[in-house]
Image (cartoon, rainbow, N blue to C red; front, side):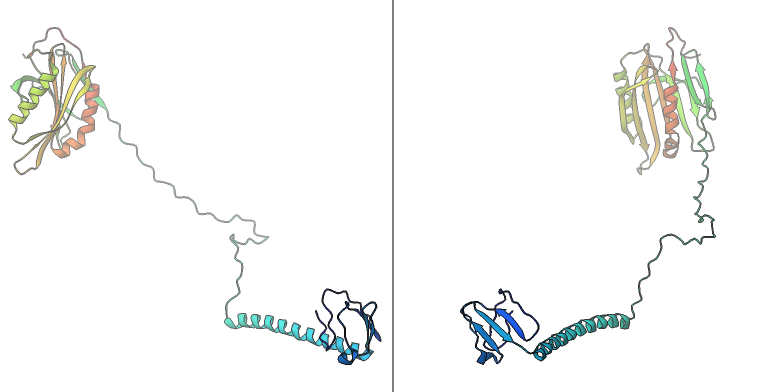
Length: 299
């Protein structure tokens, strides 16, 4: 910094050597001259080395130190006042001081009991679905064996009649669901006429259904099934009334064993169909047909 004295300028990049006492030494570069008459201080110049000797009294040195101390005190007082004002503002705002909250409950040293933990609710035991018990139906005359739910009723009409699928067939057995629920029936028919063309037989039956019922609709068919290791065709259908309400839903399966057609029909109201559809599919898997060389078709 520069010494702010008239006629005496000392640049900040010059090393200064001061000593407290009657004489103060300051090194000043050449070309920068000071006049003692301008400074008003006892200054002695050495032109060869560019050195000026400032003669200051003890009183003058003490005055400078006192002035520097006052300036420093004023600066410190300003900083202290600013900090006090910030603290005062926080207290006057009324904001509550934050208190750290422990995440776990405090336990006194003398209390060794465990902290209570809420017990997990025990799920109510669920009863397993009742296992279906099966009975067995056998007809050695036509080489037929079927496993069915034992609470179903078995009928053996042995009646030869013209069916809705356009064939004169013998109804050898009916399986009727329990009467306390919507009733569905699975019937087993045997065709006395011999044939080996399953596809033609199936197509003729579909055409006959469409002619027999005014509102008969084929909903699905599958020509790639097997019953007792014999190829089979399946048709799913529904029959509606004149107002479009579904009266009957049904499934028919056709298979031919050693030239003899077997027809399995499952039908009932829409509610009964949905109720026993899985049972009917199980019955189909349990069917066993053993070929018979010569069999009287009716008695």
